Length: 221
Ligand SMILES: NC(=O)c1ccc[n+]([C@@H]2O[C@H](COP(=O)([O-])OP(=O)(O)OC[C@H]3O[C@@H](n4cnc5c(N)ncnc54)[C@H](OP(=O)(O)O)[C@@H]3O)[C@@H](O)[C@H]2O)c1
Image 1 (tube, rainbow, N blue to C red):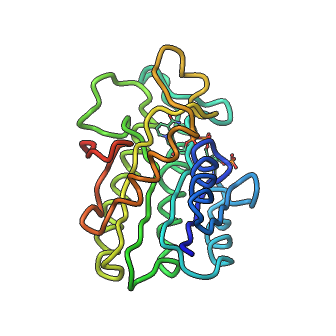
Image 2 (image 1 turned 120 degrees about the vertical axis):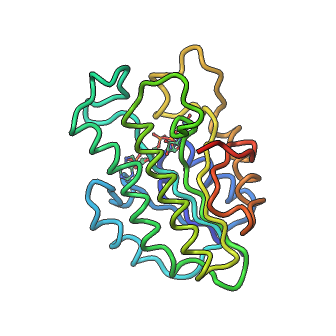
């Protein structure tokens, strides 16, 4: 039975992906902040949590992320930027996933196809940014994309059959988007999960280092 590790299985998309993989008879292991104490604001918990996991996973999904927290929300203008808000956004959306990638190699098979899908966001695309705003969240996802791309180059040497990529999940109704959903077309997490499953599981090593959307199409950096 194939195994999937879902980092952030307490989130809207992470929980739905866990259900989808279980439905498809994968063996699922999920870890998260609220259920297992894996907190990107406490980086020592990352190494501690991952080192307690045994075995090999054909697929790893990093489904964590935050847009609002501790009173900070996405900025409408650069004049609203705060050092603390931007630093926390970077910590949760870029540094946390980077430290997961830094500790993940021993859980990835070297002798068969494997995938690491990291949930990013289209708004992290510099090429696609025509609206402005949300500067800390955008910047943290752009940083995340650079981390994923850079890690993929290194993984290609040690894990030649691995696809490590950034994935925009589409606009999905979850706690993350709740306050911002009005007027925007969106999908439920349960509708989205089988779509993301297909994109993730159809990625091969030739796709490593790229940034895809929920349709499997490339997103400009
Ligand atoms: N929903 C969308 O429309 C949308 C669009 C574009 C991109 N995305 C991306 O998709 C990913 C999942 O989003 P979602 O919509 O499923 O959001 P969500 O329902 O709010 O879930 C967020 C997840 O991130 C975890 N998390 C938050 N802060 C954390 C921290 N400090 N340390 C460790 N884990 C932390 C949460 O853990 P706990 O609940 O256990 O605290 C939860 O598992 C995010 O990267 C988001 O940026 C979502």
